[in-house]
Length: 147
Image 1 (cartoon, rainbow, N blue to C red):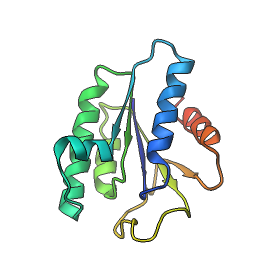
Image 2 (image 1 turned 45 degrees about the vertical axis):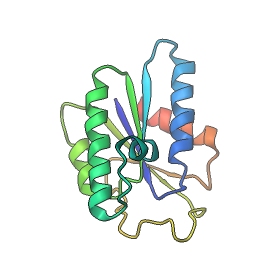
Image 3 (image 1 turned 135 degrees about the vertical axis):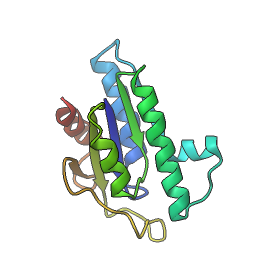
């Protein structure tokens, strides 16, 4: 299963991805789970282009890695802004893969860090306001959603 945690910068994606993988390992001792994090991916690929094209390339790379890693992992958690709805929908609509999208949002997002052209999901997703839910509550919501 591929779980996409998407939302504006500083909405809690990386924090929840780390806690979710930890909880999955705690619940299922033999589960294999990895995180594909947008910032880490940029460091590895040296893609420091934050233009629309640069972001699109980074998202596509994350999607390709997630699809390839799904064969050897029970869970692949993708944690990145992923501002383009069309790329997320293309992945979610692929019948070969079990994809769950989680949209995170928060008022804590710092000025200047927002992606002006971020397109929130419209269908088939879990919505979590990370201002209203603790990390533990948010992870429980995600676990309930993916079951």
